[in-house]
Image (cartoon, rainbow, N blue to C red; front, side):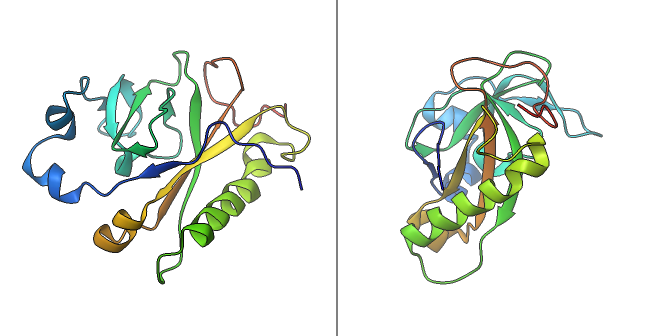
Length: 165
């Protein structure tokens, strides 16, 4: 089976202790925090968002770090690199990096055709994911995987849901 990824798997690092002390952007000198509509939860103002608060439907721009604390999100009606199209929790158990990445890859791959309207092999789109690291798994009880999709080499505007390409 052919597999592609947008970028190497970006890992989520547990920051529960840090974020209790101050906003992560302040700790790392980051950009302004994104804003969400209180009722719909949609991102209404671009900026940084805690990776643990990503939601299906969030649109984001490239994050090339291997350990991610925050990601740059924008309203989906603005040009963006990726869109979160699926998230799910991994089963509890002992930390096993290969098993975590295999389960994340399979979960995102399986959800791809329902979101796009074509199988992964027929599509021109790519997917990647944010997955737990050993630290976030063991110290933060992190089991969430956030799958995101994009059109390689170009930004999109709006959602890729049902685009069948």
